[in-house]
Length: 488
Ligand code: BGC
Image 1 (cartoon, rainbow, N blue to C red):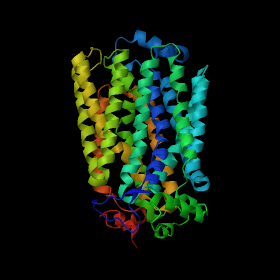
Image 2: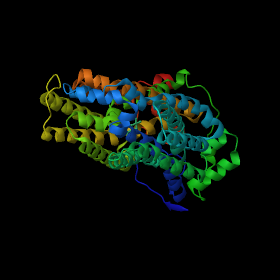
Image 3: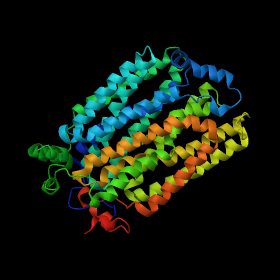
Image 4: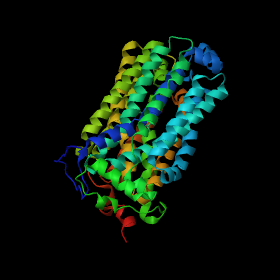
């Protein structure tokens, strides 16, 4: 059933149907819900690592240090074992996302998503029942495999199924569900933190989003591109008609599929650079120091246990709201504008946080921060979270999934997710040590990266709004720098 056609968007729309059908909306909501498991995990680990009973059971040395370390508020949580709890997931995710490229080409996007959901489910169960650190880490590794698969398959799924004119909004659904996952996890931590076994509940409840997304995936069909890649032409035609509407001529879109070739050819240089640079920069916005360690961070700057978790909830809500804003404007204002605005906003907020911390905690980090200033830090961080939520958050999933020709799409998306995880791993593993040694300077480090990536966007990122996936080559051909690679 066709729910409505939308007009009024500038830019080449091409020959393919731009209609939004009820079927495409439902399909995309279900697919995007796989962002839930990633978000839940991101949000849950930070809170759990501040829970006393959890630390007592698995990382008692951190608690001893916290008791002794009255001298320097920045160093309390500086423990490599503790950070490896959070970051082990990303190593596993890295391996999984690389193998997911073959998998999505072979078994399809949807089946890869389901496999991810099931693996994540197993990880959540092991973590909830963990009796020792080894079980914790094994659980994390399974979770990592889960999100490795789903993060590779879902953005590609969304971009392949969405009508070109509204691809930005549809794809943003993935980040939206990540945001919901983060927020739900923060709220759950707030409740469970008061119980001695609360951490088990927090970690174990990850089975819920896993069930939601895996069951949901059972009811959606694979993308037409993926079906064709696997030689299922009739099925692809049927699936495309279903999402584009019965009255739509799907043959031009169907005829546009080709087999897989390598991303390392010269003509794909711009794609390769973007598949690496975008996720790399996304992580260097510093989002995960906030996402994972918000509760730790707020405690470090003087919030009590409860208020640190509430602060994390506030941050999560601001982030979620800004993702909605992004979905509403990304196909009008375009990707470039949002990238630039968000970059500048994050730069300003981080410099602000650094200044406030420098002034209040002193160079050695020994002075206590007053309540008023702690709130100011929270406000600045909300400004930061909003900047991320409408720019680098969703767009780092959207742009890599839309710039590749079908031939290199699975490889391109795999590289992109792998770079995302590798960078997340390094940054999350080093952040608490960085905070301990560089103190407020840590925020200046990330601010500098935000400035750099904004310049990169201005110079090197072409605008891709409204352009059908099959016509994407034109954006590179017209670009002042990249055209030398794609033409001739
Ligand atoms: C990033 C994650 C991050 C999350 C925060 C995602 O787009 O890839 O690393 O934790 O956004 O909401």
